[in-house]
Length: 57
Image (tube, one colour):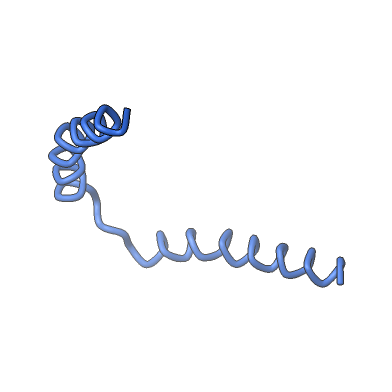
């Protein structure tokens, strides 16, 4: 059973790695505004989690 899973994982890697390499090479580069669009929701989620932790303790 373990050998079967190892073969399935190796098969997935054989098919996925070339596609991932292609996507990374041909993807658009992030601008300054893109990073702010990522950071704002991340900061809001972290703040909400901190608020929940403080409300419990």
